Length: 528
Image 1 (tube, rainbow, N blue to C red):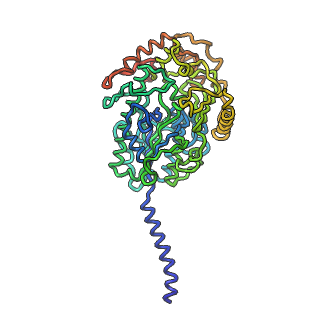
Image 2: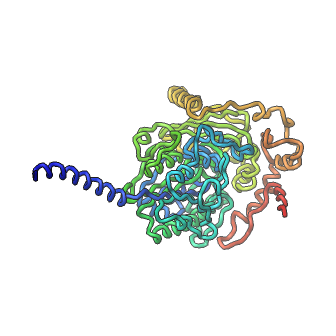
């Protein structure tokens, strides 16, 4: 009987022991918290990426504790498009969120849900710790997307401190300082001799100072990021929190934001996951911002209702990825359309509206970019190099192809070079497949082109003046702003530069306000 009893009780005890061990293991390995930090309008212009002149010790330290991605890109070159993609894990064109400042926003299609809602349904406490969502779909208000909305950037309130102890948290925060305008850094001002301009910018003291001012603003943001990470440490949460640090898209300079050159889509991306991702790693994989979505879902054991376009950053699909893709469409009421495919070695940009100039009128850029005034003056005076002048042309080539190993600044278009014919054909074929089978790209309508809507030439010294006077005569939300070029006479650009001068060269402790270059919009009266 004793042998018979043992024969039955031992398997039972073994199962019980295994069950207890599994339960203990689950308790010992809670789901990770997620902290997703975004900065605005910034390329990998950080000291950990080797940018001259700038010091970003706190972001550098984060990189030393995790993995830094050298080939990270956004899918859209402006905030609302890129944030639409990052909020869903899908390319913005696929979900209908590709037109910046969409006026007729619609719900997400195909059963797709915003990432914070997926985490909420899986038992996470979701928090937005800054003011901005900026998505081209509805619902898009922060209170509709997140359970808790605080604002660390203004009043220091930390959303994760509202999280119940039995729940993990998913928190997002945006630091907006690197969006124009820029504050100077009194703690560490940067000498213009210490910076290095890309060759597509004219190397003048004015341009160097504007560039250095942006780097100083990033140093201020770096300290804000460091303060936030310190709070995470003080609250005892760092060891079980996956931290992502990224930019939403490229830099707010000429040839940057709004365009598909690397200056517009290349972003910093850093991932820290204690005890899971070894510190000090540098990845050369081709990755996209939307890959973060799949990565954190997998890390949390959550399955999306619809398979995402983004892939796990730690998985084989990303390691074997050959190409990344990006798209640009309407920017405010500036109508244009471009598509891009990039490998480690080559970039191809397809300009779908080549008859439009690169620098057709955009109210935001003309009112925010000092360098635009400096270089427009030099262009109209014939003082730019051929590499610098090509961006000021009255129209674009249909195809731009760059050999990135020989030409990392994307200056020499080799699309017509027979030596690159096979590469060009391959990239065009891959881009066509992506447009057709992945994002379900839509054709450009005659209404969007608006080729016969406006007079042939601008009747006023600036397009800005004409647009301001004709608001009631045209629905710019539908037909866009006219694509006349140049957008200002030489005299008007010289007036603009004169306004910029004291602001660009202001002292680090100065309180000089940014000048009005474009006609200010009238503020809507608040309803009482």
